[in-house]
Length: 375
Image (tube, rainbow, N blue to C red; front, side):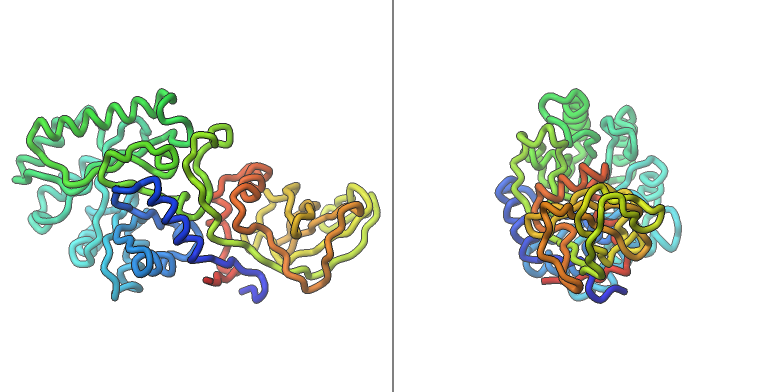
């Protein structure tokens, strides 16, 4: 584990982002997506703070293992957990966990649906159903909606707990993109089919982060923010003008300077003997691909204060080189703190764009060697 390289996570920034979310989704219930270790921010600490300080009581995971971790480590708190993809409800040990630990699987295929409807142990269990309206990843086929409703009624149920779908293209305009328009229309058809058949659904949701940013899908009872709560926008840069979001990155990545020295143009640096582009100085920072600072970050610009440097040469397992030309040298010394990213959404977006990587990957790519500190 590193001692001076760390991901510093601001819980006050999380609170601020939640207030911003609430300004958009005034009346909606929130399912806060915390899969992949809360997008790399530490799921136990994020969920605890969200329950105790923000009043959020519903959370979404990807796997049963993630959900079980929350139940076991946050046994003193009251909240609901939903498993959205890797449900494995047909496995006996998994079905027992769902039944005994109050964890709800999101049902997205006929096999899992029929298993639950046929199993008397699940007679009073909440039925959370996902339909495929055009993303073509997970979800019950919308052409089978009548058969699904028939199976539900034959089981003796007159209602379901939650009806949902997932948008494939919410990073693009909701009201103009054909795929988004189709998915909203299809979801209305599914809801109407349930209503016409006399099968009620207590809750419903369609909006993920990109849709929330555009104020779309708020007529449903719930929204499901993911990346949004951690700060970045989910919209493609060319559509940023559509966003109502004014969040901040809740974490910053700090390291320190191991070495700082003068270089001349053409002087070789590190593995592969990469020549320096001009005269200047090189800072060796204590982050490498062993920490999740990947080789994709070569060429990206990093800042010390307002002075811009550039990652040059090969990223090593344990360190990386940041070059500063002589006309813009920072006031840096060995041992000084060096910030890779801070709370600025714009700088973080520029970093992701240069590295050709999405924010999700940047966050979850940090390894356990980088400790998390909460403020």
